[in-house]
Amino acid sequence: MKRREFIKKTGSAGVILSLPQKKPPVPGSVKRIRVIKKLVRIVVPQSEEIPVDPEKIGLPQKIEDFISSQIFFVKEMMRTALKVLEYLPYFKLKFKKFSTLSDEEAKEIFLSLRETRFTPLKGIYLGMKSIINFMYYSSEEVWKYIGYEGPVVREEKK
Image 1 (tube, rainbow, N blue to C red):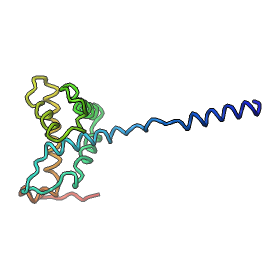
Image 2 (image 1 turned 135 degrees about the horizontal axis):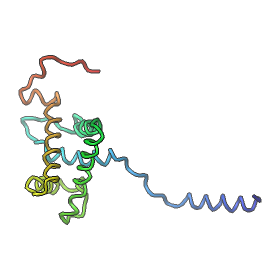
Image 3 (image 1 turned 135 degrees about the vertical axis):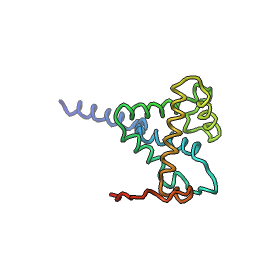
């Protein structure tokens, strides 16, 4: 390769690299956690009787870790359910993702799954609500407010 050709090719490569680039893709777990955070705000009751903030005890991350720890088939079904939930508002003619809706709109859409006749959507409602409630009420920070003293035999934390 001659010097002139080398300069032309490296110069054009420099111009191409200086053009605006697309943003790097967001990892899937971050996208799922956005949906989980919205679900947690909807499902977990906010009251003075249990003043534990679910996000402060790391509930969304605990749920994501729980999903990631499942066997392949269950893990993929749960991740698919979160994807369906994320894009469900488009089918209700609200042109935003579930995680970007206001809490009231998201709650309305999530609760509408309870009355649907389409079994998979009802399964998403029941499954997500069950997992969130189970994970929230099994947190040690919540136990003293619900009158649970903890297990008789405690496991050692690793």
